[in-house]
Length: 321
Length: 291
Image (cartoon, rainbow over all chains, first blue to last red; front, side, top):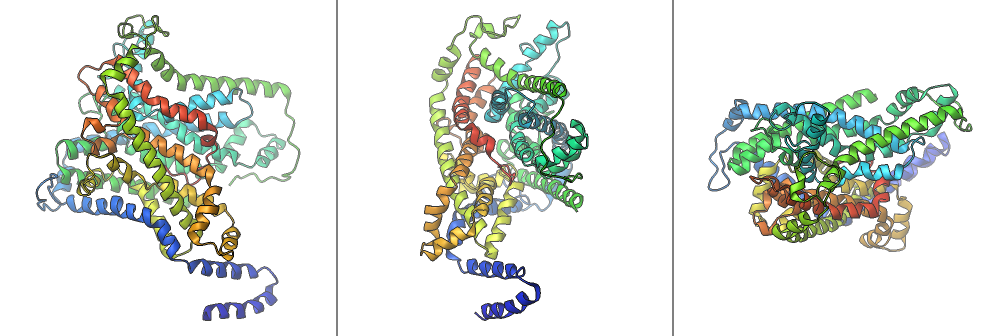
C-alpha cells in the first residue's frame, strides 16, 4: 500500500521532467506487482511439474550421489566405501576406453550433423530448388525412424557378407571391407548412422532460423554486388549464430549420451571396443548389479556434460559481447 | 548480428541476370536431389528388402527390387513375434504420455510466462537444468526411485517420469509470452478466475503449440528405448523398440522377421507425420531444447 502511494506520488514529477516516455517503467512496475498478488494459481499450475521434478530428478540425483559412495548392489544394505568407486573408475581401463570412444564419436558426429543439417535447411529454404515438398518428407524420414530401427537399417546396409555397401564395392572390383570386425570401421558406420538420424531435428531448428533472417540484408548485399557465398558467410552465418550455438550444444550433449543406435548396429562391438559411456553405465549398473559403481560413473558423465555446457555458454557469451 | 547494415531497406528486390539464376537453380536442385537420394536410399533399400523372400535376401548378386515380392516377413513377424501386443503397449505409453505431457507443459508454461513470483522464475531454471542432466545420466538411481515407488515392470513407469519435459514447457512459455497481457487483465476485470481464464481463453489459443508438442512427444515415446528397457522386465509389457531389439540381439538374426517387424513399427509414426507434417515444419522451437 505504502509502495503504491509512493509510486504515484513520484510519477508526476518524473513526467514533468522528461515528458511522456518515463511513464512506461512505472506502468510495467505496477503491472508486475499486480501479477505478484496471485500466488495460488501459479502454484497450482506448476504443481504437477514440481512434483515430477522433485520425484524423478531431485530424488534420484541425491540418492545417486549418496549411492556413488557405497557399494550398493540394488538389494540389501549399502556399505559406505567413501571415494573408493571414484578411485576405481580412475584406474578402470574399460571406463577410459568407453570415454575416449564417446569423445571420438562426438567429434565425428557433431561437425557432420551441423554441415548436413545446415545444408539441407538452406536447400529447403532457398528459392532456387524445385521439388521441396518431396525432399522435405525424405529429409525428415530419419527423424521418424527410431534409433533401434535406424541401427537395423545401417547394419543391413553395412553387413560384411550381405550388405549393399560391400556388394557395390566388390561389384566395382574392390575388396570387401570389414565394417563390423574392424573397431574403427564399425565406429565409422555408427557415426554415419548418427549423423543421418540427427539431421532432421537440427534441420528444423536451422529452417526456422533461416526464415527469420531479414531479406533486406540480402537485397542490400546484392546491390553491393555480393555473391552467394559472400552473402552466406557475411549475412546468413552471423544471423543464425544463436541457433548454431544451440544446435552444437544439443548435438554434443546428445552424442555423449548415445546408446540405442550403437546397441542396434553392433552392440558396441567388435567385442567391447566401441562401448560408449552410457553402455558402460548400463552394463555395470543393470547387468552386473553394481549400482554404487554405476552411479559414480554417472556422476563423472554428468560432470563432463556440465563442463561442456558451461564452457560452451561462456564462449558464446564472450563472442556475443 | 550481420556486419552489413541495410542502407535502404525498402528498395525493390534486384532483378538478377536470368542465365545466372537458371544455373543456380539447376545446381541447387541437383544437389538437393542428391541429398534426397543419400537420405532416402537406406530406407528404400530396407523397405524393398522387407518384401523379399528369406532366400532372396542374401542371394548374390543382390538385386534392388525383389524378384518374387512376398509379405511373408510381415506375417511371420506378426505371428511368431508378438508385434500386436508390443503395438498396443507402445500405443498406450505414447498416447498417455503425450496427453499428460501436454496438460503439464501447458499449465507450467503458462505459469512461467504470466506470473512474476520469484519462485516461479526459480522453477524455470530448475526445468532448464533437467535438459543438462537427462534420464540417461542418472539411470541407476532413477531406476531405484521407480522401484521404491512400486512402479517397476508397469507401463506407468515408462509414462510418468516422461511427463515433465523442458522442451514442452518452454514451447508453451514462449507462446504465452506472445499473448498480450491485456487479454489476461480483461478477463480478470470481467471476473474470470485464473484457472478458468487458462482453460477457456488461453488453451484454445495455443492449439497449434499443442499439436506440435503432441507430435514431438508421440515421437519421443514411440521411439524410446533405454528407459523402457530398464523398467520393463516382463515380455508381455515390452514396447516395440525393446521387442525389435530382442530380435537384433538374438544369436542368429532372423533378418526377414526383423525387417518385417521394423517396418511395421515405423508405420504409425510415418502416417502421423504425413498427416501433420506442415505443423512440424512450421514449429518454431525457439527455446531450442531437446528432450
